[in-house]
Length: 109
Image 1 (tube, rainbow, N blue to C red):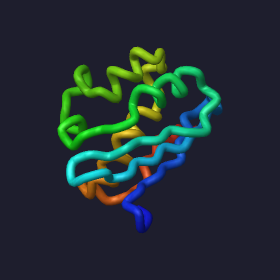
Image 2 (spheres, rainbow, N blue to C red):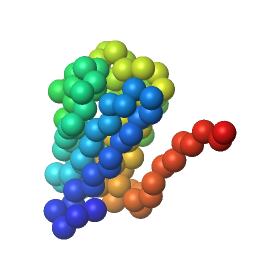
Image 3 (spheres, rainbow, N blue to C red):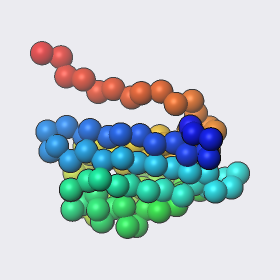
Image 4 (spheres, rainbow, N blue to C red):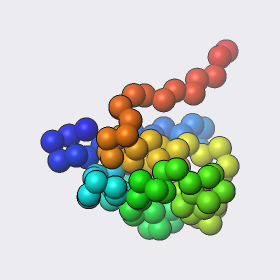
């Protein structure tokens, strides 16, 4: 987290190669503003336009009702895209509800 209460994560989602940066900045005790940038993926670009803010309450909604996952589905994101989860992780950290720590999914060869 930087001095302005902003948390940014770099997302490398895999074989598609469409990496992006997700930044969440606390705007009050229970909400963050979101910025998703740098992706050449059309679905993530659509997602970035619709998911611009989250509340603390949004973080605890069930997957089928979570606004990030609902918007990701509407934007046409692949079900295994890691960007929606990165949005939630960055938001959680920016709200002070989690420590920043890398999340790794690594294939064993």
